[in-house]
Amino acid sequence: MNRKKLIAANWKMYKTPTQAEAFVGTFLPQVYGHTRDEIVLCPPYVCIPTVAELVRDTNVGVGAQNMFWEKEGAYTGEISPAMLLAVGCSHVILGHSERRQYFGETDDMVNRRLKAALAAGLTAIVCIGEVLQEREAGITDDVLRRQCENALREISGDQVSRFTIAYEPVWAIGTGKTATPQIAADAHRVIRQQAALALGDDAAQKLRILYGGSIKPENVKALMSQEEIDGGLVGGASLDPASFAAIVKW
Ligand code: PEP
Image 1 (cartoon, rainbow, N blue to C red):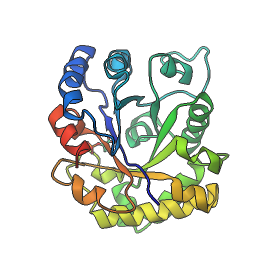
Image 2 (cartoon, rainbow, N blue to C red):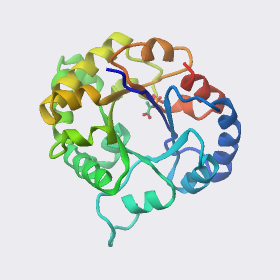
Image 3 (cartoon, helix red, strand yellow):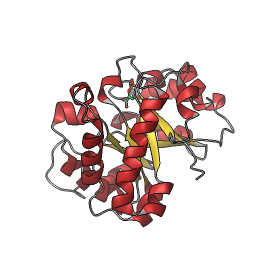
Image 4 (cartoon, rainbow, N blue to C red):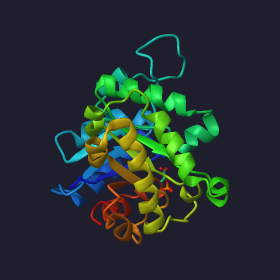
């Protein structure tokens, strides 16, 4: 199955609009004409309008790092799917481990966000992954199956082109420890098997499964060369335009 890879930058809580503008000015010429992979920048909310304006009509898309599932209402501090679309977002990251760890995000909340994102017309990047204790206890596959099953509740196979799953082992995020290509590929196979139960075999074959966790220019090629790895979600190494361009052009 030929799945076009998606390489997404998660800037987390870094960069002001001025700094984002400087990044895009340097980054865009470096990836000009790159169509082999899909490229998406996910800046903090306040940078989205600036970045969206600068990348309009280019090969680079824009995503948010989170989103609430309600359309509007008295939800202080939250952002709706329609608001993201209105400022130029095409993508949204959901269920990142930092949201789960620091903000009480549950599998059920991730599922609600995913359904709302798809209904609104956003493409979702749904993050799942085990923590170190779970890997050491030998329950990684169970954790991935549970997270995947819950995230995909009431999602149908014909929506598969509109979301990806990012396998992000929590012990590899921001730690400099990267999963070996073999560990990542094994996890991706488990996720695809579970996705087949929710979406059907054909849709599961089409599902893009990204890897995330300390991807750098030096390790990206070994990871992206794996048949099972359909792209990457990149945190720290996406903050520098030369570094992220090198990753995109693996
Ligand atoms: C992430 O934030 O999704 C991530 C993978 O971070 P890092 O690349 O810094 O490990």
